[in-house]
Structures are given as structure tokens and as C-alpha cells.
Length: 96
Image (cartoon, rainbow, N blue to C red; front, top):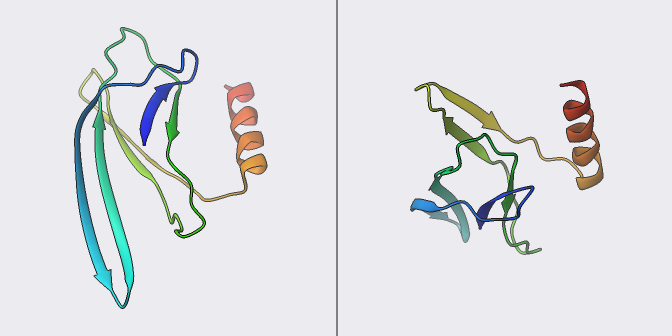
């Protein structure tokens, strides 16, 4: 898994990673915490890349973004079909 600048495809530096795993009745619930740092002077549009497998399901991705002014932004994904998600993203970018 990695975080990359959408424009340059350059990976952002991974500063820290931790795992929290719970196993119950043959199923594993993973919480992976990754800390990245934007070393560029400007804001980035980013891509989160992760491997795909039909043997696991993804329930959500949450992100806490620490801004230079000391504030935080929280994001949580909603699972949708790829084409529908891409169209929503394009609409959001177009509307500002």
C-alpha cells in the first residue's frame, strides 16, 4: 500500500505503520495505521494504492489529515462501484 501524488505518481514518504488484528471464528479484522508526510511546499491530490484480492473485503478507509496550521481534517470512505465513485469525484472537482 502506498500514497502517491496523482500528478507525478511519486510516492509520499511513509513515516510509520502499525497493525491491530483481531481474529474471531476464522475471520481476521485488520486495522492498519499508516503515517505519510507531504514534503512538498504545496497541497497534493493523492492516490491511495493497495493490492486487490477476491479473498478479502474492504469495509472502510478513514484518514486523518494534519494541516500545517495545526488543524485536522477527517475523511471516511463510502464503498461504491469504481465508475460511480470516479464520476462523483469528477463532479466534485468540477463544482469546486
